[in-house]
Image 1: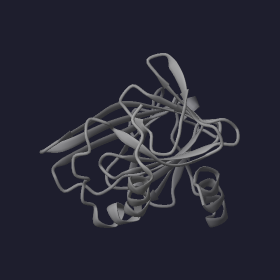
Image 2 (image 1 turned 180 degrees about the horizontal axis):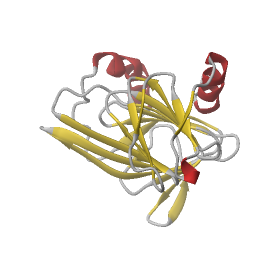
Image 3 (image 1 turned 30 degrees about the vertical axis):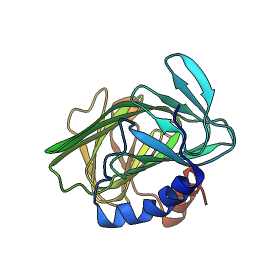
Image 4 (image 1 turned 30 degrees about the horizontal axis):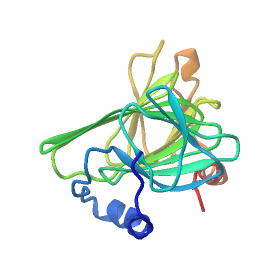
Length: 209
């Protein structure tokens, strides 16, 4: 597993807010899909059925599964400058990451737990970003969403998100900022509007301060 040197890590951490504000995709950094920008606790990475400790600066490739324990959090910088925050007791798999001159295709699978994904703006063509949980699939384009598989909730924090339950409801729910859906386990996309305090609490669960 490739590890970045400390000075590169410093540049990476500084680049996170800049990348999201400009929406300019990263220059080529090799074949990796993502890098570990920050961690706490003792997260692990599963690669080819081998579990290893995850460290700041490690690369994450397609097929890898990131896992946190009850006290761990991880901030991932994807190769297109999108940011994935992974909360405690969570498992996330990178199923697909494809950057081409005319578009990008990304597939993330949240097997269990809490996450936040901030998708960077992309001016190079079409965006096909999808996050799948055990009960739903969310399509995102240049926006931010939060989800929790235990609560069975997905929220749009910025922009719009389309959420479809994997069973039952066929038409996706279109969420605008501050709106959520739940009950996907029952085949529904029931509307839910959390309070500002609830949203702040959700974010605190997954982000590193």
